[in-house]
Amino acid sequence: MLVDSHCHLTGGHLGEDRLEAVLDRARAAGVDGLVAVGCTLEDSRGVLALARRTPQVRASLGVHPHDARTWDASTGEALEALLADPAVLFVGETGLDWHYDLSPRDAQEAVFRAQIRLAEKLGKPLMIHTREAPEATLRILREEGARRGVIHCFSEDLAFAREALDLGFHLSFSGIVTFKNAQAIRGVAAWAPPDRILVETDAPYLAPVPFRGKANEPAYVTHVAAQVAALRGLSPQRLAELTTGNLEALCGWSPSS
Image (tube, rainbow, N blue to C red):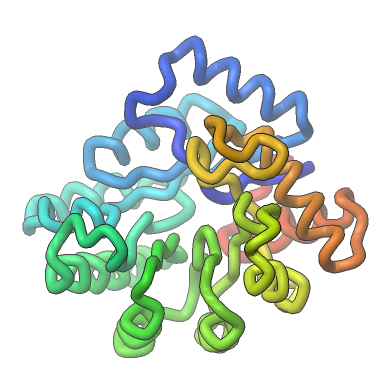
């Protein structure tokens, strides 16, 4: 049993027929659980509808830093109502993206803080996006007292990993760990505490080798898991058991339950 801890299944890149085929291929590959992620309020509504009707899927709902400029008081209220649903495991994808800067940085920070506070209020862990903003991300987490969640698509260095772990966060590794030029990330994947690692696809982005450059999908998390297992000297089966157990410990959900 394996869980893809972060994937995107809505947003228009999949029609209903293709979505069912993607879910079928995931099951056939032994991927029994998927955490589908919403990045806007509208997207989050679609993700929640999918999670409600699909036992294989649970939800993570939030407003991505790219869309922080759209946030207002009504957004927070509407998001909170969605997050209260038991099919929702995480708050986010939230955080900072200073690579694209599609929203002003002050708006990104304010919306990140607002979602951290929602997570605390609702007792749910965070799903965090951070790109080219490591110090600011950690500073905000410290200032807000955030203590539980996932650094998704981990792509930072060992120093960042140490501090994120000290704050209580899990590290989720994506297809990047299969890239030959990702030696620093591979090093963190080999080193990280066994009870704090997860694997993901971030589908449809970042397809792992041997599918690099193609559309990603949850079935391919098996390749991510195999790479992390090899780096840690484990069997793929043991890595699957470990990461599935870690997700259950973090948010109380196992696809077998």
